[in-house]
Length: 174
Image (cartoon, rainbow, N blue to C red):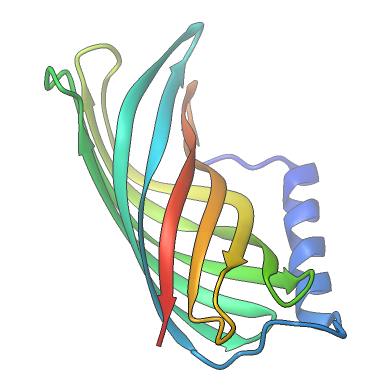
């Protein structure tokens, strides 16, 4: 679980700015609880080797503290078609965010996840890892209850291994 000083400062700065900024046109904090489901395309990198393990199915349960900050709980699982790789992870995250207008919201996500990875290519890894990334929510209804999310996350990075990828999700705010 290593995070460079520059990345740490960048994430802390974004968190501070997100929780202390004001927007004229912002997505409000109504719909405080949300549920989100989607998939991510994940890559495992170790040393000079890299391979895609395919689609990982994700589910988030989140809550908005205010229009600038939320918290999330994640569950995800996958296995390759030939069963050479199985992966499951769950985590908790803080989610600073900022609305660009009434329909587009940028966010960062930082937290910890518990990862269980077994692969015939790179061995096994189990443990808690720092995870971080960011993305964009696109609201497509006037009540701001339905949205699509695009994100990119670094799920784990330790001892020459890294697990990262981009995702697409659908969310509903209650």
